[in-house]
Image 1 (cartoon, rainbow, N blue to C red):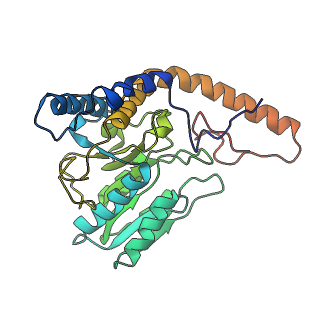
Image 2 (image 1 turned 120 degrees about the vertical axis):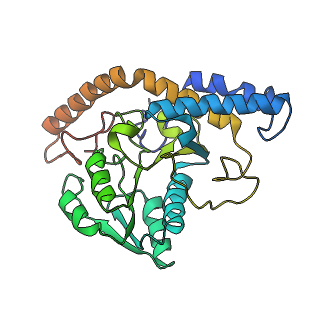
Length: 297
């Protein structure tokens, strides 16, 4: 029997999520931009999903914007913030172990005149807050540090990193693709300005993502068209996918505490018994500050 162990890369859609999505493929298929009953029903479904995603991170529904993926959310967050607020400064600070979408959009921004600096991490993948404090200066427009690394499981001190960014009036963005639904990410408590979210990483469908933007923060859009998502991301919304992401967020919120404890016990047992039984094996990532669902050996 094949055992699938790569949930960090792709996960199945939960049955409850699929059931919630199905009517929007062939029954309630209206365009939310249409001024008739079918369109209004689509708007209601989308707004309910927005509320559910917002609840997962303790945000307001007006602070959630849907995209096609976490990669798009990262691109829009970094480019949109850097270009919109470039008068503030031209320095962007990221960590050495960000997702490739953050690394590559940062490289693109250097070609547009921005200066990108990388914060080193220690052998467990944890960022050096002292180094971050040295790199963030008055010319820094944006700091982007992932909430947790999906490959090695290390959870970053994003609250402290956000404080360093804000001391220099820089925007703080975090890619929470791997962390959402696994650990608490309350927007008020952690004080980030922008956050990337992925549907598939919370057992929703692929092809859907979201951005959290703190009230008052605006980004320069990179897709121009009909002005959907408050003008931030034009294009007809993927209602079945958005409904699925909303349902997935609702289920993750409900299960987070109990499932997190269960997974932590299973993870620790797997790591302990593997290290004891396989000579020269070792754990990658931080031994304590790590996602409950991750074991990288």
